[in-house]
Image 1 (cartoon, rainbow, N blue to C red):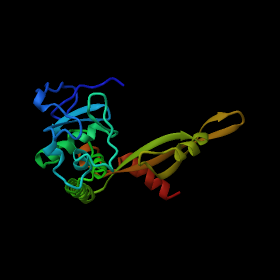
Image 2: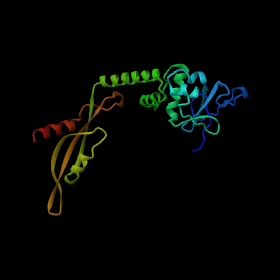
Image 3: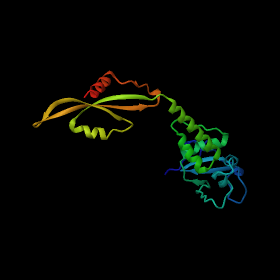
Image 4: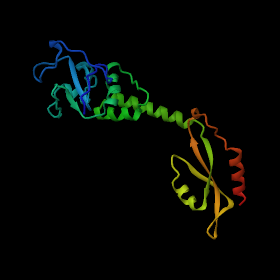
Length: 224
């Protein structure tokens, strides 16, 4: 794996500035340097000892204190090696810097919670759990919408189609439309299958009401 450049801001792709001799990391036992370099999953982060020591019960605090019970290897640059996801370490580190949880687009609260629990940052754990609970409550309060689809299939395809429905689609109604062609000496029947799916997010802009065709087919099927 190619080595990535250090980034003092916690984001990837930027080279960290050179440190003055007085600021460079020192071996354990020779003092407490201000700056600490971390190698998290192959990505370098540069931060201060004060930032990492915000939570005295956290893994990062113990790391800075050279806890003898904590197995903390270093790479050849002197950076502490941590085998975790660097994508979610960025929000954790920024929280320790300014006390706010900021998530880039595409990052999930659950991913930050996983890292916060690993590093044992208690205040961040509580904050993320509250945000997840708030998000789920908003989702649950949205009216449930249903999207309907009408699928046409042959008799021999019917079992496979119903058994392989996924992504939230549910079987609603089956309507026979008779025999459409002959295969050998046997008539092959065709069916219309009405399926539905629940949508909890109104932003998709999909019509939640059944189409007129779906309504007619459901009425026909209920009389069969």
